[in-house]
Length: 289
Image (cartoon, rainbow, N blue to C red):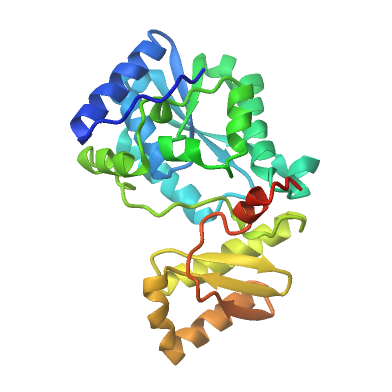
């Protein structure tokens, strides 16, 4: 169960000490399963757990479904190997859950609930898990667009980073200090986050988005989202990289590649990358469908 966050202190060393002590106190014995995506939060949590408990008492649990980009799956395995934590892929079927497929503003609840249910019912006994934790940080705890947190609460999932008051900036600083390879990795929400709420999530759409984003990233952009608007692909790249698109050859490459992924029209969003682009407006308006 989570507790009130501890006010953060400056410095990676103090945060490291607090996080390791917290994990040892929260789990004096038994094995910890970490709901792991390969992003910096869950990767740092795995690294902290290995330091606090030992690698033999930690297991990274990677949810694998149509909503996980193929590149993220590969990177997650490489990062776990670098940290020295064993990894198990957890096959989830959130696409078969009506609340997820209908794609309301609370879609993430159904996704996380599916993952934690599979862990509880199929993996906890098999791998001897005494507890499960996930990578919510102190900044996440303050955001209104995190319905997945409700699922974590329902399943009694631990939140060590948030409970220690670790902000995203502190998480990245500690990850750098420990040599975690994804310390500066941009956030990578699941592929379903590219589908507007109310537009059903399907495997075909997710595969199309995955292929289109591979094209954009292969062109050398440091980050990308391809929002799915029926036949229209709306590309988001970091605002400070928009100038690269003045190059006609680069634009042709993107248009050809994104069309080959299954879109008819290819557009660029001049606002750049936008976290929570579909969910935050609905949450602000008090809508949940």
